[in-house]
Length: 340
Image (cartoon, rainbow, N blue to C red; front, side, top):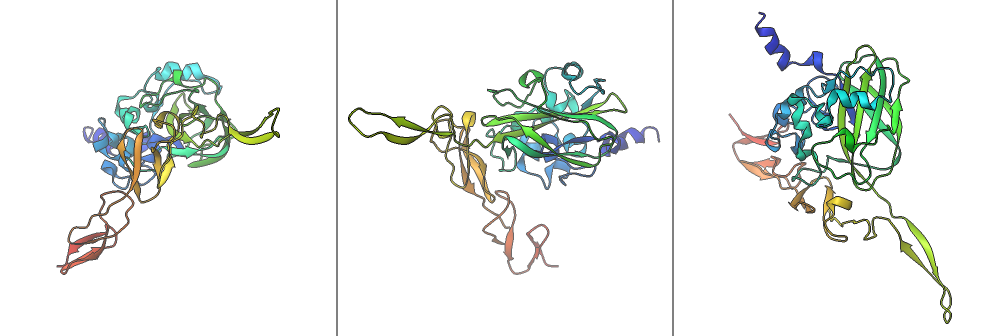
């Protein structure tokens, strides 16, 4: 019996799951299964988006799926939300999205960065600066000391790995008013402005132990153009006015790409100002093409032993609308199964 218990605990990690930022969704929440609440992602990424598929990771994403809230270390800074350096010392200055833990190293990979692979439009998420709704989910509620949120510095170039040196040292949002963390906590945070992609790093420091939990949320900022009226005075002509774009997304100074059937890439992910490059695709479309030059193509459905539907959530997935003679439509799997 003593030999069996450790194996069972590794398969059902209820005691080790804690929490992560669920809006804007963190890397682990996006692929969360296991303890509730979760995104209902099953073993090997079933029910999840392509970024949750083990084939798109060199590390074991199943550790993340089954123990999505367990990214933690023990800094001991549970009375002061400004203890940035204590968390840095506990985690180390690299691989902070995984808490620098080998079992969660799938959270540090380049596959999370927008544009690196042909993933769907659901991750990273779009965000705006200003007051935004945040949500933190916990599978095992505990007394808390604080939640604090940090954002990447201006000019940060996204990659899979994130370090504390990539972040502003002062949190842009801190929550300390709750005595006990509920399964889901909702609150507002005033998000600073950024151009294009950024990462939000969250810390939940418990008050009953020295343990703290970490997560990274990849976001892409929606940038609105900034205009001003410019008046030109000519000695021989009447004064004329025109609208000029300064540092908005339509200025060559800040590159913005177009995108049919989706949202255009900006900044780093836009290879050339005005060209075609998609950051996110509309529902029922997927990204295709080279990095920083991606387009959104309509998803194609497949159907063995029947006729495929014209629309499906992910490209290449089974979605039958009619089955051949001798087959019946399974309304759960959307596949045609042989009639016995």
